[in-house]
Image (tube, rainbow over all chains, first blue to last red; front, side, top):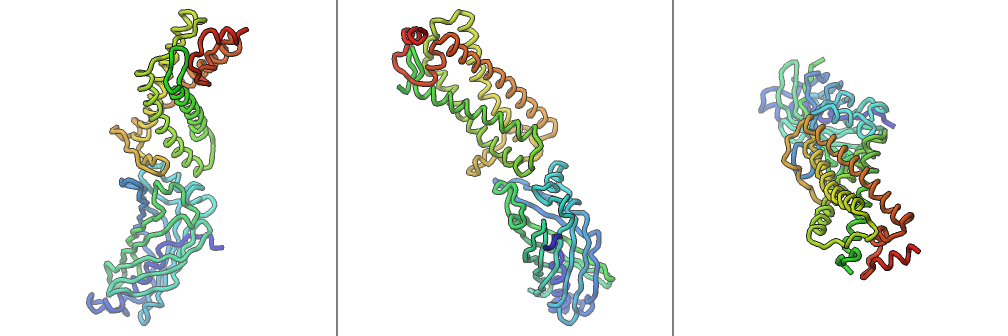
Length: 197
Length: 197
């Protein structure tokens, strides 16, 4: 059993891959230039939102503590990879009651499961600067295959940035509390920055 | 048989009385468990939603009951009642009619004023809009307090009402309780006296 939940890892990889491949020519940097190993910067932002019935804001928040690394394969973007670990205890929401509920056994159960992990299994370039990352997401002891879409947003010699989006159904992870008032689908919107190692 | 007569309650009054009574007691129990006991957060969330759905049901029926009470005649008081007893009974019934409406209205206000902004999804069928109240911690706390206090007052009056009904049934052996149990056209004082013997 994989005890950790993985979130953003797979997203990062495809992004890097896409950036270096076809889009590289258009955007000036060559894929080979972006190739390398990166660690995910703390300045990265991991936002999520759970829509609610009847409109309204839903449950929005972010995670402030995470670690991760990714590798962009300059020769074969498909072989790029990402690993990501998220600490759900660091969840931030509109108010304390919401945060406590998210940490409780109703949702992340942070007392029993300290991490959520993501380990990419496949990166597919979908455009000059976009890619799809598939991988194993582990949360609350359950591991499932999930997919994120990645778009390259910025890139220089030392850092690379992506926007990563994905919709995750939470029920399979044993987090279906509140449905159908709150959607089963959690949408993630992340700005991930990598610093070359 | 549906309408009240001078001597007894019709089926509509009796059905409303016992349905609302069951809802009130059930809602008190759910309210106590979800607020005052240490329970699983998933169960707690569910209980809140059931409490809201049944509470709106109680409110709707209480409006019907109030309207019915206003337009329909009431049976004559039992002849065995003294003037003071008759006044006390009328006052108690008036309070129950009023509180059965005010308590759920205050509960609706709690959901409406809460900064959590959790939709009221009536039995997961239809969203009942919030009342136009300011959302703030203070406002939520005020309405939560009002809801609880009104509920406790109503519980006390329900206890008095129940004790009085049992007193009439067991000690006085009149038809006070019986006439709310069964619709009986023409049931009057003679019947009461006969039973009393």
